[in-house]
Image 1 (cartoon, rainbow, N blue to C red):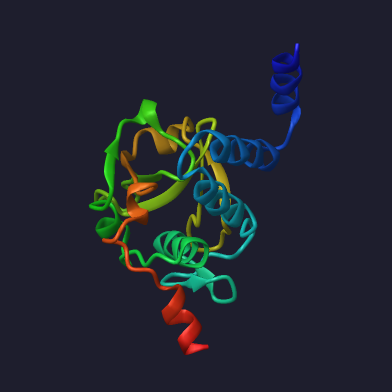
Image 2: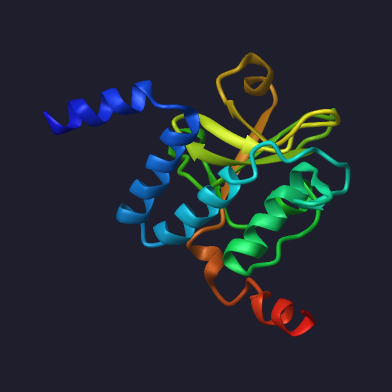
Length: 176
């Protein structure tokens, strides 16, 4: 009975509410879940932030890789490379059917593999900074535009929390 109520609530809830539920569920079942939940919730908080080519902060706006890079640094204290192509070489390769909240999803949007990146938030959705004139948004991976451009996915958590990922929180504190 409880599962029916939860399923009904998720069906009727907004995409943001569903993503928040999935983030909470991830933190309860995944060793990196708390980190994943923080990452997803921080991303949701940036919905509506304008797109800016080369942008990497809420005030200046974001491009796709700047959005992902900002979230990993601000939420987890981990520095990612600047471009989506460079990010596509990190972590573990994940098959489409094994995606979990917090995984990076990559697309060919400029006639070049791995030219776009977003963060998977669960239930076949990802959040990203799309393009000029638009803002950070949640989209369905099943939309025709995205299906034909999918290049793959990478899981950076929990493995990325290890020693190969520099912790930038101390550097940021020192420079403030």
